[in-house]
Image (cartoon, rainbow, N blue to C red; front, side, top):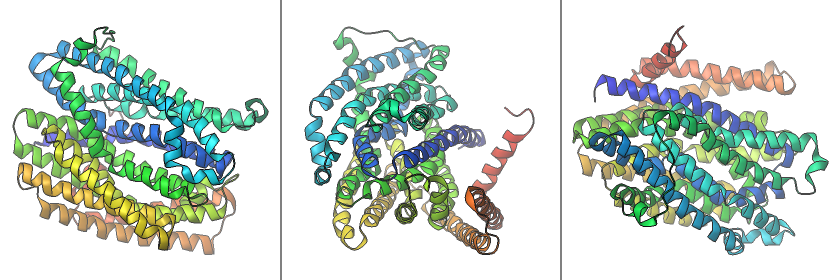
Length: 534
C-alpha cells in the first residue's frame, strides 16, 4: 500500500471521526434526554424494544451493510463505464429499495402483533407494557424505509470520496429526538398521557432529516432521482442484481453483534429494567464503535475495492493490516477507559431526573462486560466488507450465523449466575470469536495477513492502555477523596482530569513502544489544527 493510500485512509477516517463524534455526542445528549424524562422504567423499556427492529437495520445500514454491497459495484461501474452509468445504477438501486422496503414496512405493520409478542413476551406480566410497545412499534416501522434510502445516499457519497456529510447525517435522528424531548419537558400537558409516543414520531422526523441533509451534495455530484415504473427494468440490470444479492449476505455478515443485542433484549425482558440498563450501556459502546470502527471501515472500503479491481493483492493485504492496527490503536484504549471509568461517565451523563444511582451502577456493570469486545466489534466492521469486495459472501455469513447460535447458548449459560451482565459478556465473547475467525479465513483467501504484526500491535496497545487505565483511576480516586467538588461541575472536573491524565500516559507509553498508528493519529490532528488547514 502506497503512502498516499495510507495517508488518504487516515485523513478520511479522521474526517469521518470528526463528523461521527458530533453525531455520537448528540446521541449521548439524546440518551440523557430519555434518562431525564423517562428514567429506566416501563416507557423506556417499551420504546427500546419497539425501536429494536428499525434500529437494528439503522445500525446495520448506517454502519456498513449497504456500503459493503454498493460501493464495490458502484466503483467498478464508475471505472469501467463512466460516471453517467454509475449514477444510472444508483438510481435503479434507489427505486429497488423503494419497492422492496415499502413492502417490508407494510408487512411489518400488518404483523406487528405477532412480532412484538414474539420478542417481548416478558412484558405481558406488566399491565399496559405490551400494548404500549405495540403502539410504538407501529409508529416506528416506517423508519426502515427512511434509513434504507439514507444509507443508499451514504454509499453513493462514500464511493465519490465524500465522507463528512454522510457521517453527520445520523445526527438528524438525535437532533429530532432532542428537540421533541425539549418540548415534552417544557409543555408536558400538550402531549397527552403517553408522551413517549411523540419520541417515536421524532424518530421518523430524524429519518427524513438524514435523507434531506445528504441530497444537496448528491445533487451537486450529479445524481438525479428518476422514478422507474417498469419493475423489470429495475431488477433486470446486472448491477442491481449484484448489489441486491450482496445486501442480504452483507447484512447477515455485519449483523452478528446487532442480532445478539436483539437476542439479549428477549432474554432481558424477564429482568426488571434489564432492557434499559443494557440499552444505555450499549449506547455508550456505540460511541467509540461509530467514532473509530465505522469511520476506519468506511474510509478503507473504497481503497480495498480499487485494489480488488486492479487485482493488487499485496496492496489489499497491506491496507487491511493497516486498518486493523488503527482499530487496535483507538479501540483498545477506549475499551479500558469505558471499563474503568464507567461509573463516573454514566453518573455524569445519565444520573438525573428519573435515572437513579442504582441505575448507574447496574448500567456500568453491563458496560464493563460489553467493553471487553469493543476492539472486536470494530474489527468486524473492517473485515466483513473486505470479503464482499472480494466477492466471497459465504464466509462472513457462516461466521455471523454461528456466532448468533453461540451467543444464544452463552446467554442460557450466563443469565443464571450473572443476570443481565451475562448477556453483555456473551455478546463480547461471540464478537471476539467472529473477529478471529474472519482473520483466519481472510488469510486463506488472500494469503498471509501479518498475524504476527497484528498480535504485536495489539499487545503494545494493551500495555499502553493498561498504564492509561491505572493513571485514570488513580487520578479519579484522588480527586474524589481529597478535592471533592460538589455537583455536576465537580463531576466534569474529576472525569476530565482523569481522562486527560490517562491520555497523556497512553501517548507517552505508546511512543516508547513505537506504536506508529498513534503517531499517524497525532499528525492527522496536528495538520487539521494548523491555521489554513483544509
